[in-house]
Length: 434
Image (cartoon, rainbow, N blue to C red; front, side):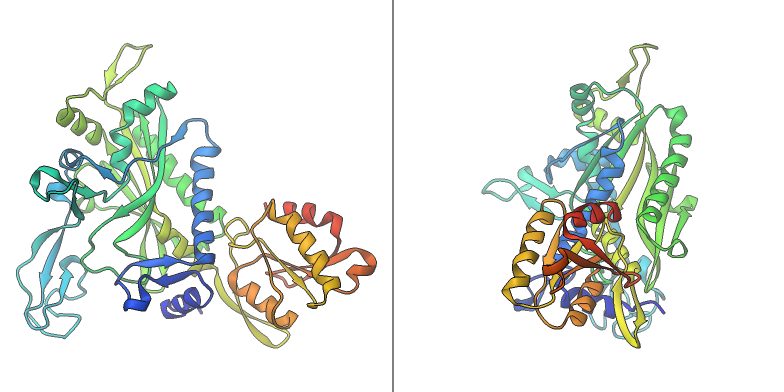
């Protein structure tokens, strides 16, 4: 039996993964703060994405573009004119909804009124702000709704500075902002979120093969990090779903507690963006092939994932309950590379003769792993707490340690235990945490 959304949200708050933003003032809808464990889990997800997309490849480089960009960027990309959702308002309760997300477009999900919606109107999702002390149209700008355009407008800068030849990619992780009409499902749909996007530039004739490659590669990334295969699927977009710039798009979808929903989109964006920015800026962003002497606009394959949304999915997928010695325990079976803490050091007693070797071991291991030293409650309760936050290994320093200079290492998933010499703990964990 899978955990409900309420169960996950309760665990997230209780154990310090996610808190409601501005909670002491009543909170802000769809805004969340990541606590001590949440920020580690989120960072680990982003690090694993960066490892797969940049570190382990020689054809992809990184970028960190500004959140604030010229208004003309969003005019050229089409966001100012077409980045909209259909908005309707219930005349009875005055609540507003996305028309395309209503289960029944004739019934208000808030008050139940039937056939009482206003006519749908286009609602632009970008947050508006101004630069400088005077607020007028001349200094209107937007908080970026996606990270991709920062890559496109830096295409020539990145290519020239790194002497890149096709095919190559540019990857970026960063905050984006969308004024969602109906945010919800905890941290799944929020107005402030992080994206992990990569634009892979290639010859137009190579785009179909590159598209297929990236669909398979991105699907395998989730599986390699332990996501349950049955909870993951690839869904191609129908023709009427495709964005105006897309020749093909698929979504990597996860089976959330409320049903299948998007984790990541992989799109063949064709040459739309580079053409648009060339036309609106007057700067030629075509690629020049020195061997063939051809000058052309590359096509772009874009894998675009939500970092916060992906972190949420890994949290849900890892949650399960089992029974150990007749007692039910809650476990987050996170892949070791995603777990917030890799190891917990648990002195069996608060007596100084055990605290000292425990702290010494913790000091050694901290150079290599995020860890926690836990001194409170019984050893059984400390094991349960570490299971619940996903810690793969617990190292118990006991009174026998004073005699044999060894510790007990407990495995989260199996609860099996190994007696390991203190001088070998680092090697043991390094091998097990790969």
